[in-house]
Length: 417
Image 1 (cartoon, rainbow, N blue to C red):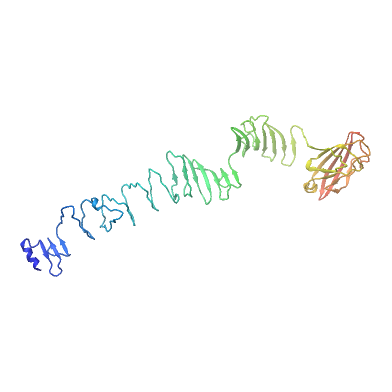
Image 2 (cartoon, rainbow, N blue to C red):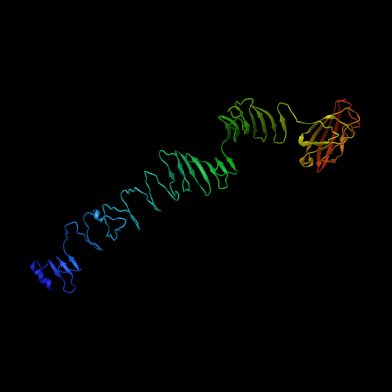
């Protein structure tokens, strides 16, 4: 040992020791292992007693006052311990955690928390999701009083989004949206843009299953599509109709109501009020319950000899108020698409021409179809050779298509004078 050891003889020789080879100084240590080793405790009195070190070993006890508070210009670094470091209160302008932070109690933040992976967020204020809101399980539930749900970006929900009480929005498949109530799907928009009500597989632009469709004015139905017999005691289906009351067109409807219905045998029924007025049968027959048959008549003031065109687009009955003014007049029966096109083989039509007359020298004795001559068969065995002298002459043409552009025409002349 150096002479300093001899100096220690002034007191206890263990109080101060200097190693002669390493020159390490020991206080209350006879074998110092560092430049300055203290075997006991160190007490520094006064406010100026500050110790700076890169490493503290053992317990660090005391209070950190304002003199040790970190500011934005001063970084507190190098504080570590095993197994952990306990700090009662840290006051800092900025806290940067590069690893993981575990908080067993509450975290109170007056500003904004920005993090890309948060397991749970419990907020009494407003939560703002800058890049959208995504739920992978459990959906989103809104509990309590709210004024609405607004999403300006795109939100993705793996489960249903519950809105209010019992209502939900769900996307069961890619590009598919459904609405539901009471845990049951009610409305669907498919990926093809088709809308289904009561069906998960809409086949048309609008498909309604297991229910009826009403279009109404207030409480009075104006249009009804029915899939079953709920509008009557039979099994007929209401296809459409207009009602003045709310009794489904059939049960208790009034005389001003109209209805078009289909029945189980394939017939189509036309009704007014509670009564059927006409029927088209499954075999193509037509039945009129009241016996009335009214047909439109095309009226022209031009004499038939001056305009021989009989256009069936204007009806099957043609009336010429001007007197027939020539002999051997040949009317031309046609339509915009052609009689041959409109009629199928085996079809038959009847065309009636009524013309005013004032001379027996003027009459009709031939007819054309689609601007082509045809062979006629006249009632009585021969074509007319004269006409009436007053009043009206009526010509009827019964036309049967027997092949393409081939017609059997039976003609008749009826004179009133």
